[in-house]
Image (cartoon, rainbow, N blue to C red):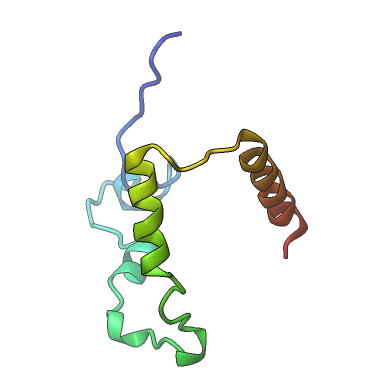
Length: 95
C-alpha cells in the first residue's frame, strides 16, 4: 500500500475567495485561533463537578504488586473475559 501524503497544514480558505485571491496578502484570523487565544482565567470550574481523590486502597495495591512479583497472583482467564464482556455491556448501555 502506498504511503498517504498530507498537504500543508494550516487555515484553509476556499479557492477564489479571500484576500490572497484578490491580490492582497493580509493575514486572516480564524475563529479557532481566536478561541485558543482566549485567556484561561475566563473558564470557571464548578466545585460540584470535582470528583475528588480516587478511592484507592494503597495497602491492597501493594499486596497485589508483591504477589505479581512473586508469581503467585492468580490470573483466571474466564474471570478476565467475564469482566471485559461486562465492561463492554456497561459502555454500550450508557450507565
